[in-house]
Image (cartoon, rainbow, N blue to C red; front, side, top):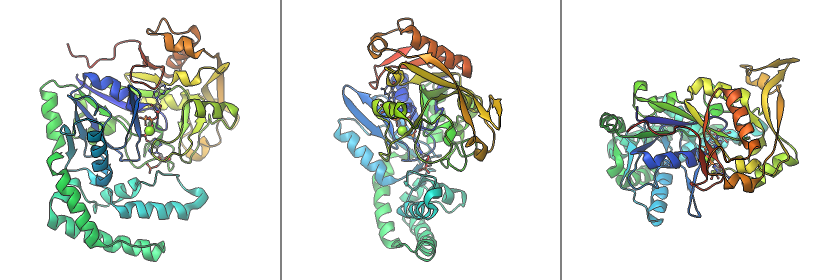
Length: 432
Ligand code: GDP
Ligand code: IMO
Ligand code: MG
């Protein structure tokens, strides 16, 4: 079946952008289906580093159609800016399609989020402050503005007026902040609508036609499984379905059309924002990994929290997403450490458990139980072009992750560039 879904298995920033770009060479369509510009996906090719916030990471392949699905929340100013930058870098934007049913992020969403995070103080979620949560809140409250509304002046005008009336009460009376002018927002957003008009369509119909024609469709998840609204470390999560099921509801494609689900797993763990993190490192080793892996938020520039690989949470991710296989990224970042560790279980209220407790407050009490492995040399890792040529200690690490998760690691990341990948096993779309 020519549809693959790519999902982050941890707390985001696993390297989904690189893996999507790599697999997109054989794709006809690459689809984002949830989240918004809270995501930051990096693609490195020929010394150029591109950071994508809303556009899918297949956009650098000229024959790929890039789809922004209905499950997304889209800040049109960010999208148009990204399209401008893409054109400036010599790439076409003609093959971009945006769902009429995706929701629009407006400045009052960001303002409300800013005010609420500040009010929470120490107890804040540590969001990206891009207005994502408040935009989804409006969607589910059924007062949201959709991309299609930007093309209808009367509809947009009525909706913005109604929303601004309420948001201004909230901002001014509850939070003591400045409100917005409905008139200005209407003008600004009608302008975005005009510029986006050629790209807006029913993307569910588009993808259905593509799948009927046997085209290869790649779905690119944003954020990660542990940031999912239901199965993540609630409430320290994002506001969307980041897991494999989200690909269907967020794009209007039925589950029977999906062939494989691919997990993207970073060889260690990172987290931006607050919330429990059982394998977190507060020492020199954590700093070494952050420095070597350039582990700073792609979106916000915040230093990422660092930790060892956690196979307890990866087993949850494998279960919820039903991974067919996985990509293990950034093995080169761990190079140079004499010993590396994998968390295989948690110690929780004096028991050793192999599955995470369901309550987030209990997860915060868990201590990681580790297995230790020999480290590896970076030059030897980078030289390898095949799995068998990788240093024995790398293979032992990879196989331990496979054993602990029950998932085969068929792509091994050995560097930032799109070419720095070792392939182990079948990774194609399964077509001819
Ligand atoms: P995403 O949000 O999952 O797409 O990941 P980000 O792009 O936010 O962060 C991952 C970072 O790791 C980016 O800077 C990537 O270029 C980089 N990266 C991905 N895979 C590898 C790898 O195998 N080795 C190295 N050194 N960097 C990688
Ligand atoms: P990509 O796609 C890492 C985190 C935020 C915060 C929580 C909620 O690049 O992997 P939000 O702004 O979504 O309401 O914030 O989720 N977060 C991410 N962390 N990578 C991301 O995206 C993230 N998107 C959101 O830091 O903890
Ligand atoms: Mg990222």
